Length: 252
Image (tube, one colour):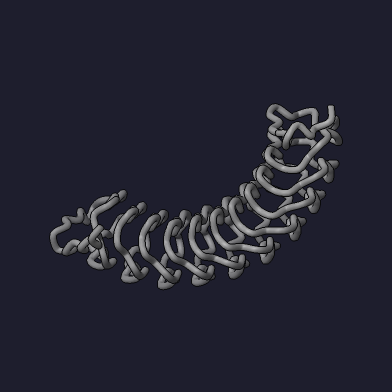
């Protein structure tokens, strides 16, 4: 179909007193004219035609910025938003994690469905509780040692081959690495507070490496190459256990 024509921002009325501004699917092509929002805490620009993050420096009160489903190629010009707690730039065309160093109050970061190939430049985000990097091109779990407050880590639909570099995340309760290239359950020894583990659609052959994860309430290892259910008798908190055989190969 024909490309959408961006709307003229002068036709959009903004309330200077508004705390929550929702401009979902307004055909906005350029971020401009938002400096009038003196009290804004939440700004939603989902499903627009934005190509560049810009002209947000005046929004000192902003706590949540939603840029889901736009055409953004680079994370930039966010340094002034020191109080930002939630940032969503999912479904864009980002290739790199960058430009986040000053966002030290950030608690939730969503970068789903981009073209990111490496986890990097997150070391200053020590308040981060949720990191969602699903549907990218990431090959390794790395550079997350300082994220010790992380509660939930989502890395589904990437190209990760090994569970590694997770030792520092002792507060992690949810770990999802579905649809990757894992062949072994390992590297989870320090995750003693882990409650939900999602490893479906990988190439795992043996249930192992869960000795220290006895708080697990959910374990999903469906669609792997597992032939035998073993090494889970100590998981006394388990409420949901997902496993599936391949071509009736599972041995009781």
